[in-house]
Image (tube, rainbow, N blue to C red; front, side, top):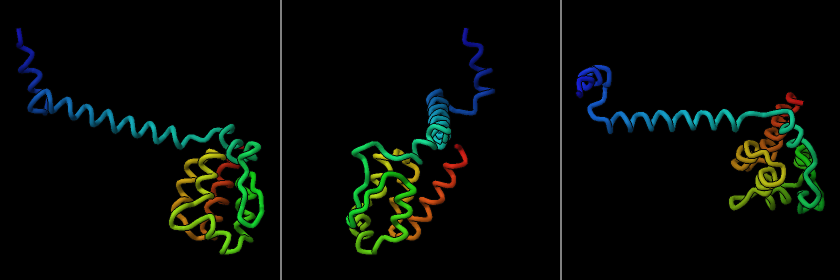
Length: 139
């Protein structure tokens, strides 16, 4: 009745069915993570247009110096001439208003995560310009 146990033992490198199951679940979880990573990095023409377009009315970014920003290009230009005082008002050890705005209003989570770690104005501007150039390839 259980003659296939010997065959199973021959082809199965695991000592118990539990060990085989644990390995299967680990492989399955790894596959799931890889698929999610691929999906999250997928940029379509529509997504690129959305990320580069003006935000909806009411979602504009209001700088401490009075400027109103509506898209990534305007943010990059504002960072070019922004005073260190205004920059440090929006980016400091406790917060990064630009990263929050990009994530919540523009929707570009990847860029938001990247600049959330940046505390240097020039590096932040460079990262935003690189992202703009990258997104333009899809339009």
